[in-house]
Image (cartoon, rainbow, N blue to C red; front, side, top):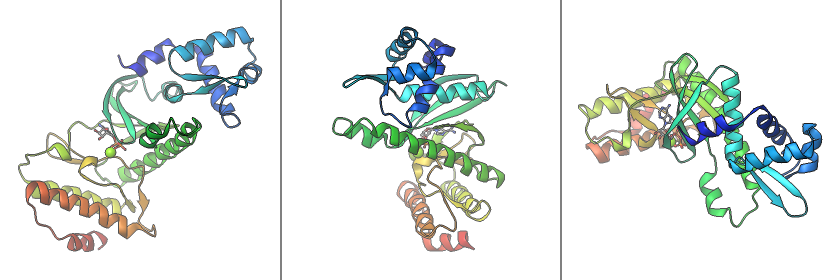
Length: 288
Ligand SMILES: Nc1ncnc2c1ncn2[C@@H]1O[C@H](COP(=O)(O)OP(=O)(O)O)[C@@H](O)[C@H]1O
Ligand SMILES: [Mg+2]
């Protein structure tokens, strides 16, 4: 069982109620005074402190005893709230092991109530800069990155819906909440680890064909496309993942992003498979 799953199992209604109230009060406080929490929870302070102690022990909240005793939601606390929502809304039944740690997301294996495997993507925008600066800057950084993560989850979900409607090979969207996306799980290897292909040009063409379909039919540009965001399935079908930074075709810098996406893919196939392709020609073809 994963850490996330075991945390979920340790929480009761009262814990979730406390986490929800904290989430709301974070609009006004970085560290929420215990007295304020008790008032909003309509609980006696002893019971509340017992809950907070457990949440603290599980690593879901942090505690600060400076001018006053206050509590703040941590990453796992926010994860628990999103998962609870998805479970209560019939999207998820269970969360399993971590599939991958990306640049700005952790992706877990999940199970839907109907028994289908899904991917559960926890957005962690700013994680790298947060790690580097956590000693220097105020802990409040976490909260602004969290908001960015929620925006990323919503944006990716929007993109996946548009792509799915246009038949672009991207994970089928299932649901999202807060900073978490649930989508079809893709089995395969990321393109950057693939060294052997029966027909490199065909694989290349499939990637470009999906870029074209996204551009023409869904009117969107990936804007972070590279060999790291393409998955090659066992049958050599390709899937394009990781869409939170997409832009509409009409974006002022759309042309620039499309060119960068296509160039990254061309350069990879050139480097790894010796393919010689004409970026400008491909761009003209995509734009039509
Ligand atoms: N739908 C999915 N099915 C299976 N694995 C996935 C899926 N989405 C992402 N992953 C895995 O998680 C990694 C990180 O996800 P990604 O969407 O690329 O976010 P980021 O690179 O911003 O962290 C990917 O490289 C891939 O290995
Ligand atoms: Mg990625």
